[in-house]
Image (tube, rainbow, N blue to C red; front, side, top):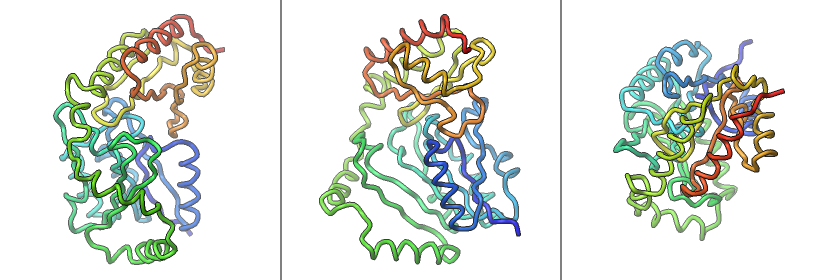
Length: 294
């Protein structure tokens, strides 16, 4: 008997998280089905991709946006198309929106739950990314819309809640006050702000390296550049990352760590200051000037 399916927009998570997704699917007697994003679509999920991935066994769509590692942000028209298909095929939507406040260029994050009051949407969020306090492990989830199709899921959540498997009280007490700070990161994301200027620098510097290209991220603090596989003879992106670390003492994450099938991408976190990024990109340009993979 064919198992039920849940669709996962990728690039999703690191390899360990992808294994965890498989394990969760196995526990639910379901199969995770990745949908690979394309650079030519600015790493945004298309209606055609989603439609081609849905079968009569599909039950859930997992949608992480703004996206890690691409920094892609979905406009309202794409979200409306996703909602339309989810409604037509009676899908539950799991929306990971933890980077929702880290949006640039005057654009706005739109929660998909606000566009689908009739659908069951589980929205996830937290403070560690939106307030730039990495390691602050306190998040939350909100179940909205028609909950009748998620009764078993809600029962499981209530059971876990009764076991008090949660963050400690002092940690949780910070959340209400933090959520009132609507402009806590706003200045950083505008022209002249630290994150904005770092994004501008890294985007231009990467595209200035022969054989390397990058799509400008619209949100979060990651960029996902592409390498010319023919120019550098790259067959193993993990080996590239290790070679770069050994020679230039700079750590990047290879694309395969995000379930990216072709070994031609890597992720950079552009949170270091511009001076640090300048030094890193100078070393990277020097590295690619001679690099040919064995």
